[in-house]
Image 1 (cartoon, rainbow, N blue to C red):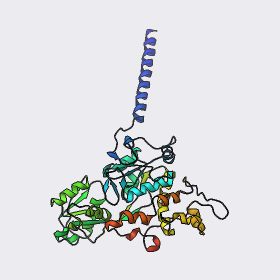
Image 2: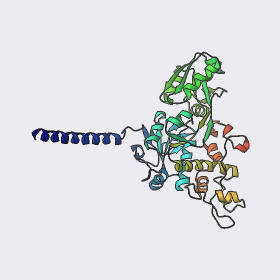
Image 3: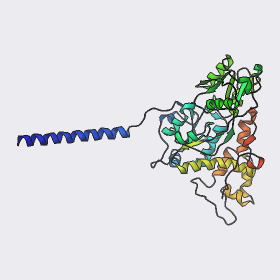
Length: 378
């Protein structure tokens, strides 16, 4: 009987131990990673956006969360002229910054309902994955590996770019041949390094020594010190950096060469098709508005247009008194709000990129020989 009693006691202890182990295993599986991206907050925020709180609604739906919060948390940058610059008054100015506003205007009817979250290059996807931002609009190239590995869904590109090379004007370098075996400086965590190596190999040139830097300010410093013979990045970014170069833009020359495809596109987190389509159609609205000839200045004149397609696009009632709602999850007048508050694609481009000497090129409407094309809104 004593043996039986001890046996029962041991079984009870074993059962308790198993329950404790199961509880520990459960705690481990639910544990979250407390690490967060190195972000700073821009205008329309008091810094709460960097806390890692998610805008997802109770069911994880980002659109519902954005609507509940009354703000779009947009990941961008703070020091790239033409694309997004944090001004002294706390506002963000630039092409990408305006596309953050486009999304807010479409979803919330208020282009200023944006919390700008400034991200370093290597923190951008971490911020998206952790839920610190709702959308990434930060001159980011859409690639297969980023689409597959970074849990990012890339959307309609808002700028078609290509990689180029910049040199000191007094270097006498006129093409990539002049950089064979030289030192080329690039930003770390970008597609740039691999593209440079591939292009020089394709041309049969001696591979350059590639030096990567965490920040463009560090590249600029190295370039001024003569430690870099070439500076490679997207052509639009080179034009931006050249415009703000301490020694003046004439001290730098962008070579007449483009050696990669760089579709720069906003991105959202995988798994939320509704939010993805909402952001997509906000971007499409800027393109379609330009095609219709609708601008920020004349949009109200189009509210009584005789063109049924325009009336549908602007969310107005047709001759039968009906308003078309395509079921995108957006207000029926979202396109009107986008154009009235921010402008069409051409206006956004002309306001921020044209002054840098960047030409429309591939970023013209399809009808003008470019790649910009909106699906039919009907």
